[in-house]
Amino acid sequence: MLSTPLQPSAPSARRIASIDALRGLVMLLMLVDHTREFFFIHAQVADPMDLSRTEPALFFTRLSAHLCAPVFVALTGVSAWLYGQNAKPGADGASAFLFKRGLFLVVLELTLVNFAWTFSLAPELVYLQVIWAIGLSMIALSALIRLPRPALIAVGLVIVLGHNLLDPVTVPKGAPGHALWAILHDRGFIDLPWGGQARTSYPILPWIGVAALGYGIGPWFKLEAAPRRQRLLVLAAGALALLAVLRASNLYGDPTPWTAGATPLLTVMSVLNVTKYPPSADFLLLTLGVGALLIVALERTPSRLTAILAAFGGAPLFFYLVHLYGLHLLNLFALAALGPNHGEAFSVPNVASIWLLAALVAIPCGFATHGFGDLKRRSGQAWMKYL
Image 1: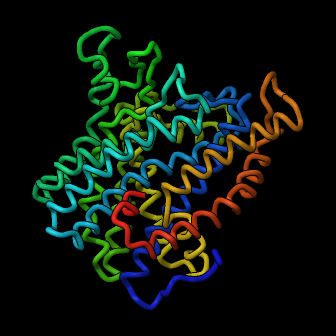
Image 2: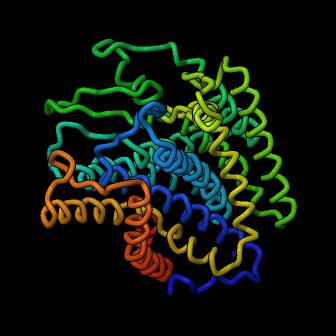
């Protein structure tokens, strides 16, 4: 059953459970956000969000989903370090695995993931999103892990905190280097040979920095609980304090400065309305700081709840594919059975309905993911590691 607790007695198992639980939590938040994408299409949100058109409930629903990609990419780095401790021969084995799995994820984004969004074999627009970004970050990390750990952390910090200095740099479409710059930092469109276009929704440079920092803190997850939690709390406090300084100054950290609103709530929303595409320094300080707090909280959470969340996070790639196909098919079924109610689309009536529908979809997805996770752990097949 999903509620079967993991064994809490072994510290290493508890740490792994907390990592999987945090993955599971952000996967569920991602499910809510993708339910919004499929079933609230009439109220799309911009990046950053347009506060004049985005009600608070929708704003904070979208804001909660901001945790997903940064936390998941950081945990990719942590998991890569942990994998390297068991890989043979050590760093070389981890580097080879990261490179191969990164390539696998890139191919997956271009095939099964894009098909899940479009149900088209030849879409006019191909979206290069989070699986693509994770894959290319793993490929980059396969080289970066050969650096000394202090140098690796320094590279990660420079990228995460300094990449907004590159915001003024643009390469016009058609100019040499446009495609490379669109992939690295400037979200844009790339012409494809068959006449379609690719949208670089997740420019990868900042995500490489996040993966590097995740790898850099990997050794913390071999420590005893107390010192590990202390370091994570210091990390969270430092990230959120720096965020406060940068947002207060309104000089650097995000392309869109905040403004005072007509009400205190609107002012808070403006301060938190940070840029995701590509993720600004402020965006990453906010989400990674909160992510560090969450993993500390999850390590103190009753094992039964941790086990439920870990069931979702134990096979995250499988969950990602299952929930996308499930939501798309469910939307087509609702459209056929009930008919369109917002133009040509079928949408739920309000934000509360998004959360309710996501909770209902999570149940079968959770059982399927839990079953696949058990199958993966029992399997002796080497290729199962890539899933």
